[in-house]
Image 1: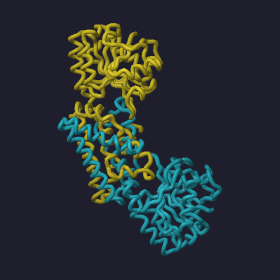
Image 2: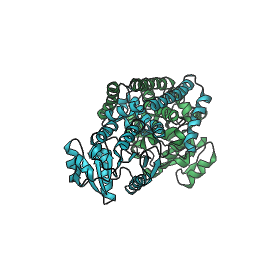
Image 3: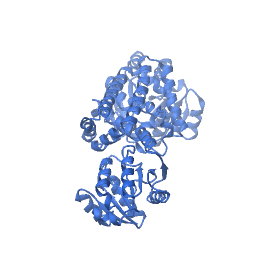
Image 4: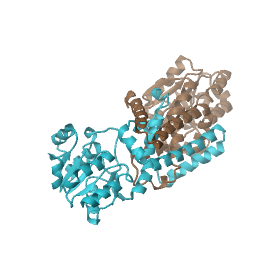
Amino acid sequence: MNIAIAGLGIIGGSFAKAIKKYTDHYIYGINRSPQPLEDAVACGAIDEIGTADSLSRADILILGTFPEAAVKFVRDNAEKIPKNCIVIDSSGIKSEICPQMIELSEKYGFPFVGCHPMAGKEQNGFSASEADLFRNASCIIIPCTGDERSVKTISDLALKIGFGRVVYSTPEEHDRMIAFTSQLPHVIACSYVLSPVCKNHNGFSAGSYRDVSRVAHINEKLWAELFIENKDSLIEEIELLTQHINMIKNAVQNGDRAELEAILAQSRRVKEELGE
Amino acid sequence: MNIAIAGLGIIGGSFAKAIKKYTDHYIYGINRSPQPLEDAVACGAIDEIGTADSLSRADILILGTFPEAAVKFVRDNAEKIPKNCIVIDSSGIKSEICPQMIELSEKYGFPFVGCHPMAGKEQNGFSASEADLFRNASCIIIPCTGDERSVKTISDLALKIGFGRVVYSTPEEHDRMIAFTSQLPHVIACSYVLSPVCKNHNGFSAGSYRDVSRVAHINEKLWAELFIENKDSLIEEIELLTQHINMIKNAVQNGDRAELEAILAQSRRVKEELGE
């Protein structure tokens, strides 16, 4: 297949490297700035620097950009996307993005399949991309306007390039779950490191500090967009979290050891029941 | 040296295993229940099952029990502890513990050195102990009534059995820092997993979920004691955290992208300035 990848950041770049490593597909790379394209050609992550015109030859178009930029790219280039080209995004939010993509998909005739690779790290950009970033990760697929064949093509490709599993979902379920599994930990990490004592943690810290603070090394433009476009679910999760924190705080404040042990035991049981 | 270890849980057991692995010291193990003692003899982690009477031959007494139980053990056995035996604890809180230990130390004549190994994991008990649990970790030392020679003996032992560094502190500084680096992450993890969607996270989660939730697999009796005995510092850190979470929440609620980016960039810079 010919695969066009628009946006060669950590996710688009990792798609390119993984596809070159595990398949024989031909890759056109498309990017606003030239440097990642040159780097990608140099290291063999893409076969060719593409333009919007390359889309006419694409069997799959992978959008590696920020969510709103992905919609804009498709809108600006919709007429060049062949009707048999499967378009997939990689956005961390779906309820804001999928309806716009579905509208464009129905207007111009190409199938759109929402996609969210559950992988990442604290670095950004093409230089942070890795052929095995997706290894054993979950690939969430929102079928949208993709027919059975298109969805199977994307699912097969995902498993072939290293994903450990494919999970099918809806935009609503996806956003509700991601608010908890991904966005809330970023809110926590960024809030946590703002404590005035954080700068003196060295020598007094171990795994707990490292794990909670890790994702505070954040790309603020990307995450501000993700948070605001998933406002309702994220606010709901933030409110649940602060309620639970306050439950613990009150038990500590009151020196109520029985109550505190009961709350902590409830948390322990959640982890145990999950086998974690 | 003859070293007595009272309390063969994960910390006492790891001290025993590390001392046997890296030194030639002789170890007496003391424990309320017999099973860990039998296991420790069987795997060579201790040389002999000790009793309170073994303390008369000890050059060092390491307390591996919960904080209050450590004070009680010393109080109950103070008359048997030789005046040249260096007593160290391993408690995660110091302001509540050190003054009581100092009082006993001054009354009975043995030096007491507060000690907190910055290492642990989500499992408990002797079966979770490891000879290399302390590898590269920080060992916090609160000199208390230890003279220079006693403090040096403990510091040298710590470095010999695998600790990466020794950090000297006071009970007040220790407790303020630990509230942030260790206790707050446990409060966060336990609050986080109480979200009703937590049970469905599989397939929608990756490193962020794993890292934030890890320590929710908690020993509720130990941590309820640690939280309540460090109430003031912990409440202060909880309030700072919830203020910062609410700052982010308000920016999300208002859809104020510039404000949200500014907060997240501030967090990113904290991590960058720490070189993390």
